[in-house]
Image 1 (tube, rainbow, N blue to C red):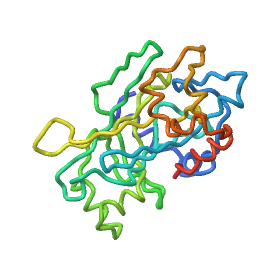
Image 2: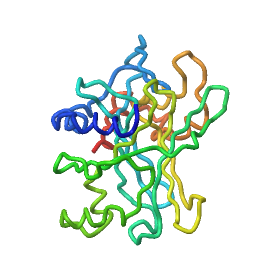
Image 3: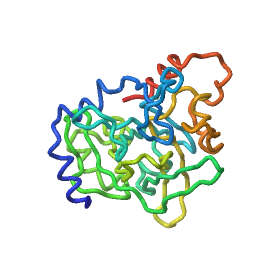
Length: 249
């Protein structure tokens, strides 16, 4: 689907459906969405999924939330993003942000899609899109005038209110990770970047360590699990799910 047609399709979705994605559907799932597939496994209790995630690095903090469509099903083609701590220089207008996706397999290989991902901005308070065209890069000057129209003059305050809808173009759920990168205007090299596991993912880090076919998951992906340091803590899967729920927005 072309970007223009895709945006038109999204814009005709009802506000109720959007708010369902942002609200009631934050409840935890029970299917094994390892590698973000939608295959249901028999060991549902141990493979219960988390629908939200968070990562922090280089002064940035990014929350992710699974996107649900009008029928209430998770749509792996999209993900909601909330930037709760912006990269250095963004508020001053000297840096921009872009998003990428990458995957890892059980053989130890990883692959980064070099194409920047398209995204739009959604106002969580008014229930409407702030931007009406897809973009692959954003700086504060692109939306500062719009923010002022809402009575907001601070970049972080604005992004504490705004959700970013990223188009992953990955309906099969092959990609595992969302990367946010910050660029200064004078360079094409990223000044900072951060990787966060795309939801849904197995909430229990021990369960996440194994793919659905029984093979060991890529170590680079295991290292990104938000609860990797608690793998031997004795927490139950239900507790891990509850902890992941705190990342929802």
